[in-house]
Length: 562
Image (tube, rainbow, N blue to C red):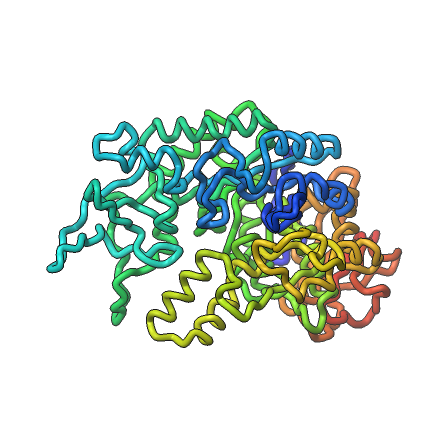
């Protein structure tokens, strides 16, 4: 990769609040419980706003809190405009919105527009008969035929994200409906303009209620492949169902839908849109987020999640930056509610917990992109490990376990397999203090508290000046102080390897800054001259050694005058 210190000229970035904001994702049921029922809620979040302000974040991303049977923890919505009683009331939402405004914080809310719950009134009406006025609000297809036992044959070999076929048979109306995730989550028919108009109304209503924007769940899956073709079968593969992977994404007329949504909801309003966009990378991100496209403001790039080393993460990001610089604005995140804890995936929580957690924070908060933190990263929380499948709540984890056992895998081996990458790794309650309920709830939590997290509780982290929490707070404050860390050019100082070093160029009155990261557990030589003119702006060790970078050492310093 190029380490040219002089990037080619491009138009300066136009400042925007969502470019400068650091977002913090809250998974409501696991954040803070205000009424002792064991489920986090909106008043619980409102009660922790001073904590979030102290941390230094600028905006919240709130995962679904709408009315739902919670087959997929709220990503199966049965009423887009209703608030689930477990989470509170509309008045509670308004109190949260007001509390954020009083502290100068913004709010974006999750919206799941690809599918609803099968308990949504739209779907109940749709499945009532083939002549229902809402029949074509969902995707209904005749069987391919019937087998020798009279069982209907699905239209194709697509495997759902949560196991089983993507097609669920509806006996009364003798058709299949499409569900890319679970039978409890039927996919909406975006070809129907009435569906699109209804969803635009949903977004406008929440904007009127106080949302500053939206995180749009699996938004690039809303357009389906014409004719629903089979997934090609690899040679020797005899599985009856095959995963869609990227074949579920980016089908025409997706971009027409996104441009229409931008015109109807976002144009002329200071609202932010960020898409959960699987299979979007340096080759096609401008199709979604290019300034001239009028589609999305931001997109999540999940191939960062699969990169096993810091070098590969940086190379992936830099390739994306080069492809989009001056034409789009990027996002960066290391984890969310669907992934393992970033410290366990990318760091060393056993031997170098503090250093690796704060190095990851340094990386996240010094790139030319909008950063998204996931709750608990600021405490250095790592993956959890339950000994019984009964303790897991995630539909994907539980279904995978039972599928494996049914196929002959021992229960012990099946549990070990799903435990490693279960989405529940990031979903256990946040530890707030040393009390028996960890300050999360006075009742029985909806999912067990992770014993491994108890020592990392927030009260202790706030009180400890050397904590991971206070390192995050210092980095977030630094990002506000030096806007070169937001808008300055990104230039690698060396070829990335075990050490990554890059420069954020001067921007306006703000000077150039160097970032040096030893992304690993072995000491390394400094690859660039260490700071000599003044103390570093940030370092995750108390003193900087001018000859050696210690394990997972991260240093930020102002570029020396020449």
